[in-house]
Length: 248
Image (cartoon, rainbow, N blue to C red; front, side, top):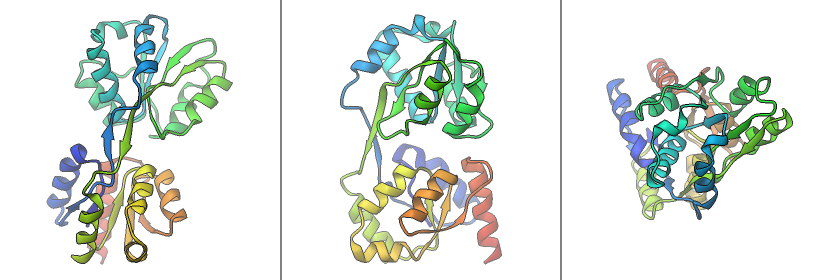
């Protein structure tokens, strides 16, 4: 089974797969890299005393934000007077590792859930949303429309690792029973790395997707999604994968 989780996040997933009797093959089509400029994020950090809500929608966002916070000479005390909002339990865990407890967590673990959670309480408020370079504009658009001021600097970006295409070719040669995708950007980067022959081969392999947005991207690119957990978490996806293989 192919694991496409970003490199530093893959070990936890592969270990869990081994526990349920699945042999994982890890080839990440993306790696997390710094943005082209930190200027907007640095400015936002310098003005944290004017922020009412800090929105963190992934583990990568948490890591990137706190790395930059430390680099700029600040610590978690600057977050005392604002509310921290996370998209799901993994982001909450990552936040807690820095000694900060999330004040609010979305019920639906995606941007739509954050909008639903905040839209009725942010009129006249200032929100900081450190985002990925390829993040959708849903949160800024919807919450600005709800009367908030959303500051959305790019905190991190992604790019294909230099050896990813070669590793994918070998993975296909060794045969795969299932592909796993945990983000829409991962699906797109995966496709971009494949030649025509391997793309056709990949489209014949069933896909486990972490949630509806990732599934939509996968289907639009010709993949057959057979697993999509009701809750968009790795734990739920793993349970669905286990059930899938037990039924084969």
